[in-house]
Image (cartoon, rainbow, N blue to C red; front, side, top):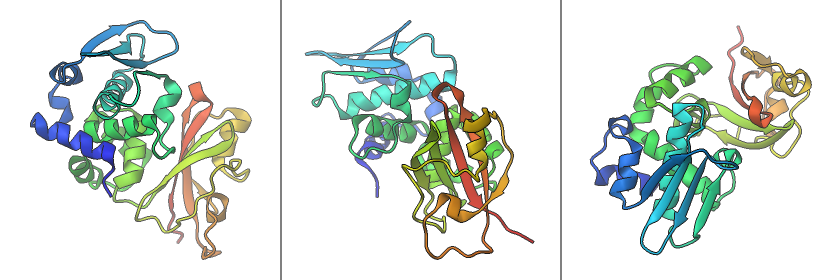
Length: 257
């Protein structure tokens, strides 16, 4: 079911006849929507929006280190502009705001959903993401094509990609939230629990291991489904986010021969 945030992004793309989000600078959308844009050094925020009586003022931190993150921050603030004008006068969005994908109804979650649809439109993303089977390299290639971050691209892939995959966001050795692809066979992920000690992800929090390759893992380590077969295995691989002491962990089916 299409969310309100995704629907608003689709309407904005249609309004300005945008087929590929890379075609137009996001700042132009801000100006077209009657808001004022500024880029400057900021403390305690990557993006900020203030709603005045006549205009909205969007500021983006000029110290954001990557172009992809900058684009997502701008798209996130456009989400606030389109969705939350009459709800709050001020939004201060820090790094944690852009990892908030799990609180239903949260303004930050809605702004993230809007940004994902704006930068990675569903139809285009499904077409490009179905060309190869899942791998972190495939996620990286998609991120390059859409000019988006690995994090945003991975979440998008887990939500609407064709290949059966589960994505877990783990922070401080706990599973915070997850995304399970509709094609994935398990439906009951473990969440709000400690990262499984048998997992390669646990090694990140135990020894700060910064990279991993696909490793076999038992389904019960990550899922509570009762119909799991003893001969069923998954692959697990993580992508580290050291600045937040967190990782994105990918889990997908393994074929054992």
